[in-house]
Image (tube, rainbow, N blue to C red; front, side, top):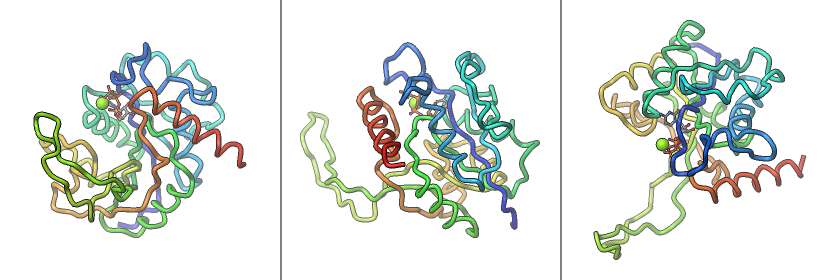
Length: 233
Ligand code: CTP
Ligand code: MG
């Protein structure tokens, strides 16, 4: 396990149903560009990332409407998205196999996280480049957690010590990830699949700014975060 090569794989084949817009949320405008542009360019901002594969729905007709030329060959669309995020990521890993060695690193990232900052990406790469397993960006849970009963009343207050919220990118070696996701269990993230192999992915401190855009109000928040960052540079 000596590879120094890093690839991105952006899951962009969802329908964005909870957003309730005509087009999938990854194509909604954020600062005048599709959300997907920001998620892809956040990964490519680190020169260590070789290529970003973008997993699209087979019926996607939006991707090619945007000019990706500024990234040259570093952006590669794969029209192999599946019915679930798990299927999309697995299909993408298989489709990218010819360009990737089993011990190359893959950073799986949600198209719906356009606010990934260079600092957190750098921390992830720096922390894990020599790691045996890999890991994910995550943030410690800050709020007090309540467990609800079926009437919507508080049944219990849950201890939040040692609880983290998982984000993306999630960084693992290509061969390990293929093995993990190829297993039968459909888990909601890559780390969960790797855990199911009995391994312990590392938690790398992320930032709350790397939110996942799910509802309409998240889109405004993402835009504010990116705008304030743009103003500072
Ligand atoms: N995703 C994917 N393939 C799917 C489902 C989701 O590539 N079959 C991607 C989405 O495009 C998104 C990421 O996985 O970038 C996280 O998923 P989520 O936020 O749930 O997006 P959607 O599934 O599109 O939204 P919703 O669940 O509201 O329909
Ligand atoms: Mg979804």
